[in-house]
Image (cartoon, rainbow, N blue to C red; front, side):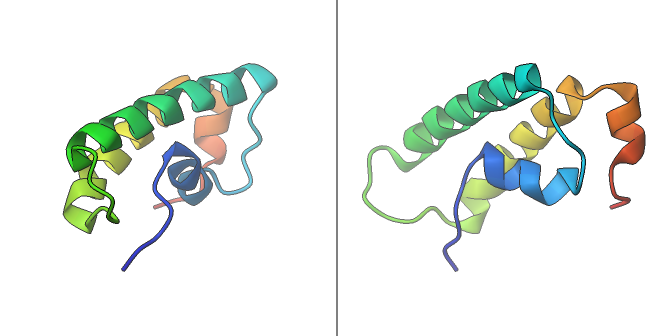
Length: 81
């Protein structure tokens, strides 16, 4: 199964209707850049879709980084997982 890989995909999955500030969107772009660089390293330049086993740790990393940038009010407003 192939699906878009990146911090924006992770953010959409965990944030629900929580709105990010412009500064947080900038932080999310930096998190996505880190994600994409790590993905490139994992794939070692291969022209193929990543496997779920390769994506999972990157998604976890992005989720941690995203949660760390949220305010207490935003964290309280997150959908229950």
